[in-house]
Image (tube, rainbow, N blue to C red):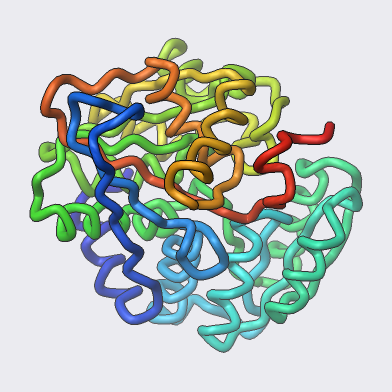
Length: 318
């Protein structure tokens, strides 16, 4: 559904709109003693996650194609995707309406409003907010923005893969990143197809990629655990499955305890604050769920940091 030319087109479209995020070389040590490793600090992207890449590409592609209506854009997400679509819409001069559950944290609702979005709270579950957003888009003609399963969104996320190639001079064997709905994985795997492999780290409690690969198609999974706020998709996206199956993406499963410890490790060792979902990639290395070969060149994506840092030392209170 997407391939390298789509990602390259996205890179041209979002140039000057997104940040080139740093690549931090990691000294040989406890993460992977025999591998060469870098941390891709994508949590420093606009709105605190990689999602700005796909949001910009989707909205700008619609605008350039004359498909961005006066009604603006509509999305369902109180998390990273909602923030990114609100930010990109404001930068593109379009109104944004974001549907969130009534249970969404007040701090996230406030941040969405600070970015200029109209926030509509509906129901108690994300699915109810998503249904309301879809209906609103149909009724008003607004551009619907899916968090992870639209071609322009996935291709935009893939610009991170091109950036990694540029920053490493193409000297990379593996990119390790967290997977929820799979938009980031799909874009990066498409960008790196034939040049480097992608490994998706995911919580044992939300194994969207692992279950899809096993079933031969995306399937629903139960959602629970410490990373559900950012990796809480109920199933892998269709685009993500297509790219994963085509390019040989592998799954590495990690426990909630390993995620909590990995998040704390990233802070203590590298002074990087990340959300629990992001820490799944580090957890895969620390637990051996993914073991690099000697000399393997690995880039670990730190994809988001919209988190409360107060529990970094003590662990979560709930």
